[in-house]
Amino acid sequence: MSDLPEGIEQRSIGDETGLATRGPPAYGEPTDDTGWRRWNPRRSKLGAMIQSGMDTGLTGGETVLYLGAAAGTTVSHVADFAGPTYAVEFAARPVRDLLDVAEDRQRLFPLLKDARKPETYAHVVEPVDVIIQDVATRGQAEVALTNRGFLHEDGRLLLAVKARSEDVTADPETVFDEVVGTLESEYEVLERQRLEPYHADHLGVVARPR
Amino acid sequence: MTDDAWFADLDPGDRAAAADRIREGSAESPADWPALAVEAGVSADEAEYYDRLRGATLAAGRAAASEREGAVDQQLVHAVRAMDDCRRQANELAERVAEWGGSRFEEAGTGVEYARELSGRDSGSVGVPASEASGGSSEPRSDGDRQVLALARQVVALDEEADALAEYIETSTPEVAPNLAAMAGPVLAARLLSLAGGLESLAKKPSGTVQVLGAEDALFAHLRGDAPSPKHGVIYTHDAVRGTRSEDRGSAARALAGKLAIAARVDYYGGDRRPGLQAELDERIAAIQARAEGGGGDE
Picture (tube, rainbow over the protein chains, first blue to last red):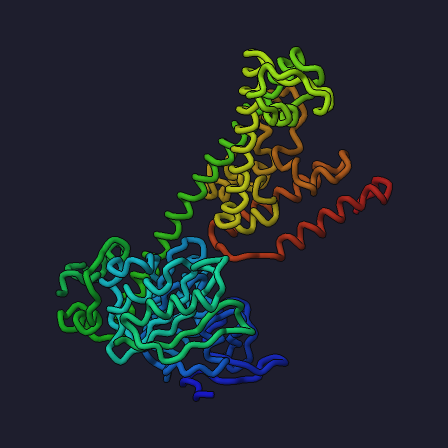
């Protein structure tokens, strides 16, 4: 298992030991009195990637572009250990929760934008060290490709692929192979791993730009 | 290059303009905006830049979210009205079909169900003699029969359209008003939104108004002095009211309306889920319904 980035620790909170970051509570997760809060890998694909020991290359403090921030569950933890974090989410409903999460954090910038249209936020987002992507739409690989321009040459793409968003009927492995294949036109895939038991039919991918 | 930046040519104090630029602006490709802002003298240093960006993105996000949700609640208002229109038309036409069908076919039924059954018949089999195998029901033969069947199909189509609208309402209402939808059920929640004219106006209504939404005729009759005050409007369809004996329905409706008004306000101003509201309502309704067992005594 790779070393945890600065700002993420295995801690015992309540009666369980697991991933935790330090920051304002965001969604009713367990906390301890020193400000650490539980990062449940079952509720977060990135959490599952880290928990299952994938080498994310994260060290802490990097700038992040987060695509598919949803209600901000994962992104709240990311903002705890990372530097400036740009959180893109397109659905109006979860953005309310995302705004609450951002309200409590100094370097988390919520953007109500479509991750398939990077030109609509390129005037705000700077080049970043890490792109974290968890969008549940078809064309997940294409989203990663169109956002490639945001990534520093030595940056990392941390991608969670949801098989059922691409094709509900197809075998997940087939879908994953296709997504990774498309991805490889512009990224070098360093690691891929299924996110079971935390998330069914999801694949975690670590890649860097070619 | 800096021309594309969200902060280009902005008055640093103008938060609204900055938020607009975040929402409406665009650029071909990203750039090191923090450094450029400092270079251009827009921000003193990176920290100040990020503070400004934070204010602007939060304001932009809030504005965009309320605008979009506002738009969605108006869609629901239309959808619930369209659903009611379809239902009413379907029922009205179904009566006509039943009346007409009853004059032409042996067995007659009523309502949309009968129309559905008629529409299932094959109007192409005109001229084919009535078959014993089909349970003795007569097969359509004439132009008149065909017209009845065509009308029946319209009834079914309208009814199915109403079902589709109901389905749309059921999936969309929890997105717009999660607490209200959870407590009232999606359809009743959408009905309340529709009667109030949207989530914002529902959130601004006192609970006494929520209680009688949909009972406007009775309310105005009461205000003219001709009638007792209505105990409830559309919230009558809620189990908390319908499941309570009639002496206590006023109390139940008042309690329910109070919680629904709070739920609408949470949905409009907050947006988080408050499962506690439901528990409070359940407790109150249980207390009211317990009066019946207590022989009409107080709770």
